[in-house]
Length: 420
Image 1 (cartoon, helix red, strand yellow):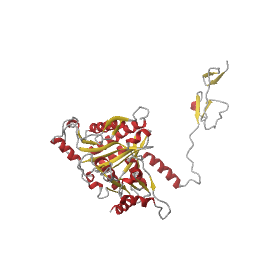
Image 2: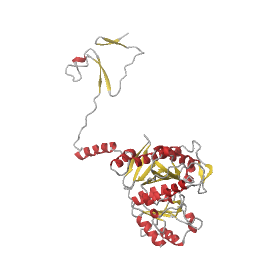
Image 3: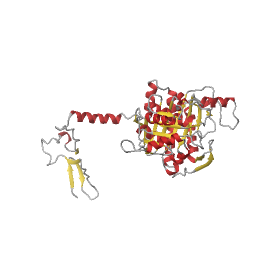
Image 4: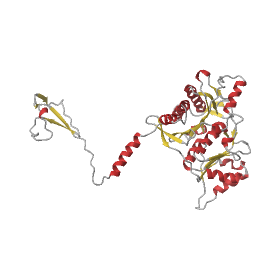
């Protein structure tokens, strides 16, 4: 059997032994007649041993065409990669700056956790048989979807677990729920766990909406039983029924091709997009400003014949070609979250007016219209019921409905002229 000599060692050459070479490394047997004195790879200290010479990594070469600006831009790109800001980091910064307190930061974080869980359920709803009706009816007389009920429980569970929430009011609950005193905090959270749930079965856009009001220390009773309303429960309802102008924070989570968590704490509107790689919301839209005008309107025109003549005239105007020869584009998703998200970024107007059969419109004031109006106003837009600002309306009932027209400031002002 032949063998290779390497110093004092022997490497047998048999069919069962192999020496593997890669494109980036080369096996050198030293000393070797191929390795000459003066060869920069020769090292007397390594003589008599088997040495692997790894191809060195090429040094950065600055060519004549490489300018200082190019190098700075490369450094900037690296800096931008490492400066990605997560929702948790952003909330901590807001707390440190005094914009919110630690308790509100925890409440917002617990809401984002609920949204992550709901997003996961929605993505697998067809696989796990979570589509279709639940077989129950909510307080508004609407058929509940399976995910309506499950999402409501997820929201309530996350808010209770935060230990910072005192009262919870949901579209799916008959009356506000006061968190038992052991786990209770101070904040009042109102929410719609799944907006546009009719879109679930067809995998279209859905969302969650939430609003956070200030503390009420007088409401620490358990409302989970079926007993009639007493004085304590009445206090809970009254504390929840606040105008939108009292909101401390509001936002929504969009479930679509991307999962986007958008919120405001009274200092602008910020949107965080879910990075599925590691399951975190990342800041992608900072200090959103809604365009002053837009070329998109969103109304359910299937109800056109049921609307007021003044509103019909307004819509007829939108359909007429403008100076450029183009009319407004009609878009209707059937999900308030989707409509508002598009509007924040592109401008336009959304309307859900009253009609002959729904004298107060279809959307709920407390946990749909008020939070969305808060967001849009923070972004420079406007929201009205046709007569007054949405945020100035004092709710008399938890599930009170209201007409709403919301969007770019100039578009809403144009509508108001038609309705005057």
